[in-house]
Image 1 (cartoon, rainbow, N blue to C red):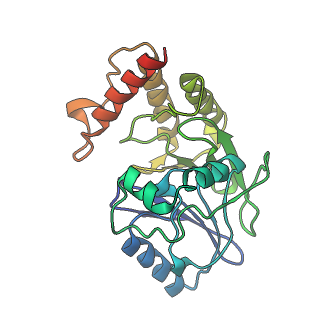
Image 2 (tube, helix red, strand yellow):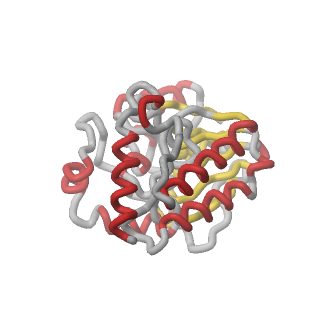
Amino acid sequence: MLIHESEFCQSNAVVVRGRAGVLLIDPGVHGYEMECLAKDLSDSGQTVVAGFSTHPHWDHLLWPAGLGAVPRYGTARCAATARDRLSGGVEAVAKAAGIPEQVPLDLLGLITGLPVGTAEIPWDGPQVRILEHRAHAPGHAALLIEERGVLVAGDMLSDLLIPMLDLNDTADPIEDYLAALRLLEGVARDVDVLVPGHGSVGGADQVRARIDQDRAYVHALRDAHDPSDPRVGPSAAPGWDWVSGVHAWQLQRLAQKQ
C-alpha cells in the first residue's frame, strides 16, 4: 500500500497493489497532485484498475483522465447521493461548495454504486471489506484490508478534524455517528495502520484512542458541553482553526433540530 497526502486539508489518497494493477481510494484533490500520482504509478509500472470513493463529498469524488477509464465504485447510497447532488450541474456544485479553481471537475462523481449489501470491493487484489454506515455522509464506507491490517476510515478518526455529522439527511445524526464508531470498534483489534480521510496516518495504538476521542466529542456535542478536544480552539493545529467554526455550527444545528 502507498499513501499520497494532498495539500488540501491533508487529504489522503490510498493505493492498494493487486495482482493486475492497483485500487485507488479517494485519489486526491488538486489536479497537479493527481497528475503527479498518475505519473508515479506509471513510472513504477503500476496500472490503475479500479477506484473507490468512500463517500459523496466532492473532495472524494474526483478523478483525473490520466488515471484511466476504469471502474469507479462507491456504495449504492453514495452513488445515488452523488448523482442527486450533481443533477443541477457540476458548475452549480462547484460554486456552492467553493471548490478551488485548480481542481479538475470533468469526471466529478462518475461512480458506480455497488449492489446494496456488497461486502467487498470487486477487484483482483487483497480482500477489501466494505464497512458501510450512516455517519458523516449518506453511504459512507470505511474499508478494511484485512490481510494487511489497514483501515481506510474515510472522514472519520482524524487527529485534526472533529467528527462532522450528517445534519441534513438523517433523523438522529448523533446515534448514527455513535453506531459507526461501534462498527469501527468491532474491527479495531485487526488494525495495524489507520488511514483517515484527512490528517495523520496512525498505528495500532491510535485506533482505539481516536475512536474514544471521537466518541467523547460526539457525547459532548449531544449534551451541549465543552468538548475539551485538542482539535477545537487554541490548541488546534496551525491552519486548522476553522474547525472551531464547524463545532459552533454543529451545536447550533443540533439545537435547532431539537
